[in-house]
Image 1 (cartoon, rainbow, N blue to C red):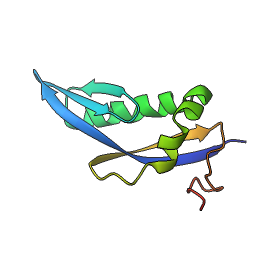
Image 2: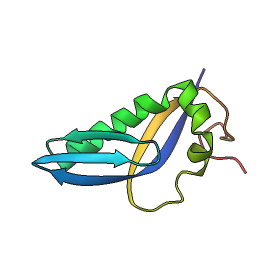
Image 3: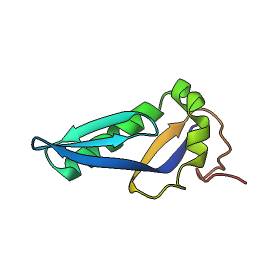
Length: 95
């Protein structure tokens, strides 16, 4: 049984030639949409798929643990935890 982790990640959104581009610089993940909301939905899905990978979770463990301290545009993502990085049973970082 895997635990679900909820993160709030900073993203930036720009408009380029009628297309909205959303980027999460922490993980070098980007997506786009015809509207700002579509771009946000697409980046959320892209991040969730990216973070599901066990190798990615190991590689970005420190970033995952520290997420939430930066205040920019925020997108919440949920993914199945496949590695341990100090989160308690409810997906909340443990002290």
